[in-house]
Length: 111
Image (cartoon, rainbow, N blue to C red):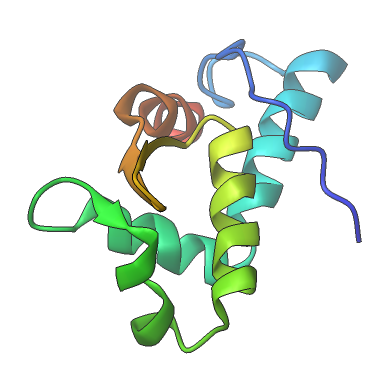
């Protein structure tokens, strides 16, 4: 199943403020689809709660119980959706949450 991971533009207010138009609903749905996978949701949570505010991909494989290529694939989807940033340091990639993106999703569901 292919998921459109185009970064969403933060187009929308709360779904309870006004009815969403087709474009806004599509952008939000694409962002929520990325998070609808339990592995990606766990990865986002692990990065968000990392003590240093960032996590190395190398430290996410074992606790997640998935192979390195699978973890990298899911992390790439989160980056492509604009929910994480990636910084290369040598052969490893370090990830941080993009708080503004999470705030947009949270605010879209706010009553």
